[in-house]
Length: 213
Image 1 (cartoon, rainbow, N blue to C red):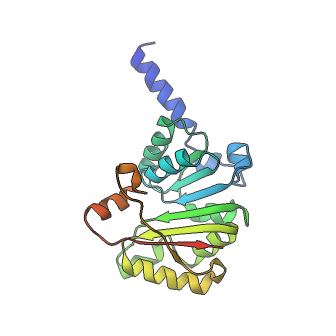
Image 2 (image 1 turned 90 degrees about the horizontal axis):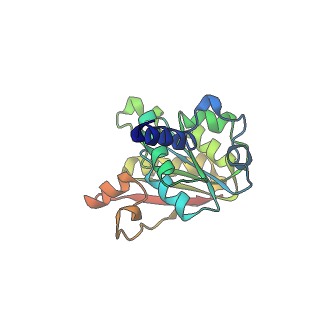
Image 3 (image 1 turned 120 degrees about the vertical axis):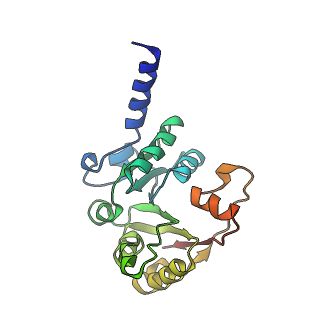
């Protein structure tokens, strides 16, 4: 087999090790069913091209990470990042996070949920499509264990303020929002996501909070 074909086959095998289709997921999403161990599990909703997943899975090998991205091409891109780093504690899933949280993530099972720079859906008639809505927030809270953390960052002030208000009403058990600080960006991986990189490079304000259940 030509060397180029061998490399392509190896890349495909590596990608398959970190990319799971929704139909192939277990009925319950836990560290045991996904990774075969009891390490803490955190989920990122809307992983984009996977910069956060790549960085955090390398920095925290003692924690497992599941990324869910509705745009398949970005989920594949994120999985390629994980494969290139030979990550054993991270997986990507292309698909809609809401039914997975509703039906497959057990109550009080997660150490963390991350939502960074979700699509703001600017038009009023489209705001019901936002990732952070009453249903998703209730599900995130239900799935977090005591002491689990919910991280939310955005550069859209309206989205930030309306979400903070909504959380206070539908999930008061998450407690008060605690501001999070940006990392000192000495190189690209100091940015948590590509959108944070863009916002900071263009001096766009970013609103960052963390809740501890």
